[in-house]
Length: 307
Length: 259
View 1 (cartoon, chains in turn green, purple):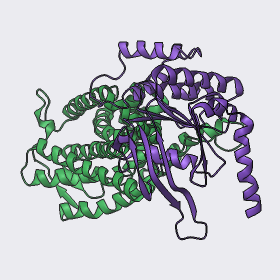
View 2 (cartoon, one colour):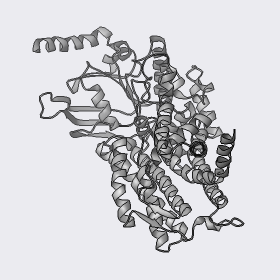
View 3 (cartoon, each protein chain N blue to C red):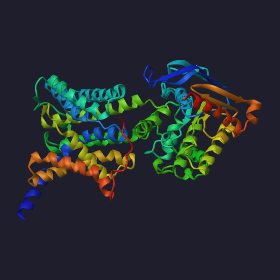
View 4 (cartoon, rainbow over the protein chains, first blue to last red):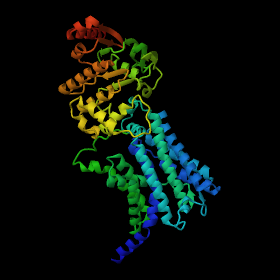
C-alpha cells in the first residue's frame, strides 16, 4: 500500500513539469503527423530537425540574440531541412523513409558544425518563458502558459488552413497524388512546402526545449521520432482521426498523455534504459492492432504509401 | 481544338524489347467534336491519352490544345485545360476525402486556389444539384468518404467532377470498362448527356464497338502507334459493329502471318 502511495506521490509531484515538457514536444509530434497523415509521406527528418532547431537556438542565445530571433531562425533552418528531404524524394525518386534517414544522418554533422562542440550551456540567457507575468521564471507554470498558448495558436491556424482551398489541395496530395495533379495541383510545391512546414515545427520544438532546459546537445533528438510516433498513436487512439479537427488534435492530446504515462512508468520504478524498448513495443502493438483484430490472414491491404 | 502533330514515343529505346508506342501520330479534333478511339491492346491508345494529359513525355512532336502549345507543360498546368476520367474508379478520386471535398478539388481545377474557406454553403448547394442529375443518391452523401462508395458511384462522381467547369477537352479512358452493365449504362448515358449539353470536345477510348457505333461524331482507329482508320460524317452514321470489327480482323490476320 505504501509503495502505491509513494509512486502516486512522486508521479503527482512532477505532473506540471511533465506537462510543460509534453506541450513543448507536442510540436515534434505535429511535425511527425503532418507528413505521415496529411501528405502520406512517412518522414524521419524530425529526428534531425529537432536537434537542429535546438543547436541553432543555442548558438544564437549564446551569441546574445533575443529568444524570439533564436526561435525564428531555428524554424527557418528546420523548414529548409524538411524541404531538402522532400526534394530528395521527388527529384531522385528515393523512398521517403530513405530520404529522411539520409537527411537526419547528414543533419547530425551539420548540427555539430553549427555548435562547434557536442553541447552548449545557455543557462541564464533570456528565454521566452521569462515574459509571463506573475510567474516566477524557470518554473513549470510559465512554460505551460507559453507552450500552451503557442499550441493553441498553431492548432487554430492549421485547422483554419486545412479548410481553405489551398489546404484542401494539400490534403488531396496526400490522399491521391495522381488525382491531385490531374486536378491542377502542383504536387511538388505542396509536398515540399508541407514537409518543410512539418520540420519547421520539429525545429521550433527543439528551440523551445533548449530555452526550457538551459542547454543544447547534439544528441537531444535521439529517440524523439519513436517517442513522437508513440504519442501520435495514443492521440489517434483517444481522439480519433476521422476528421481534420480530430487528426490535428491527436498530436497535442497524444503528447500530453504519452509523457504523463512515461513519467508514471518511471515513478513506478521502471529502469530508464528499458524505456525505448517499451516505447517501441507499444508503437508496434498500436500499428499491429488492425491486423491482430482479424481472426486470420495477413494485414489487409493498406493504401499504398508514396515511394 | 486538339491537335497532335507527328507525336513519337519509344519505350526501352535501344534495348531488345524496344517498343514504339506512338509512331508519328497525327490527329486533330475540332471544337465540340466527340471522337471515339478504338484499337487493339498495345495500339497506343493509352499512350496517346497520357501524352495529351502530360503524364507521358513525347520523344518528338507537338501537342496543341485550343491553339496553345502544351507539349512542355507539366500535368498540373495542362489540367486547367483538360479533364480526364480513368478506367480505374480509384484513380480519379481522393479516397480518404469526402464527396464534397472531391467536388471542390475539381471545381478549383482551372482556378487559382486561395486562402478562403473551401467548402461554403453556396458550393455545397451547387454540388448537391449537380450530383442529383445522376439519380444515384450521391447528393445526400456529400460528407461521405469516397472510399465508402461503390465503384460505379465513384466513377459517376469522377465524371461529374470532370465535366464540371466545362473543360476545353474531356478525355475518357475506357471509363465504363470496370463497371457492371447497368452502371456502365448509367455512366455512359450521363456522359453523352453532359457532352451534348455542354458541347464538350471529347476523346473517348473504348473497347465497346457498340459504343463506337452509337456515340460520337468520329471513329478513330489506332494501330501500332498511328491512325489506321478514320470514319466521319455520313460514313460514321452508317457504320456497323461488323464493319469496325472487320478492320480489327484484317490486322489480326496480318499479325498472325507475321508471327
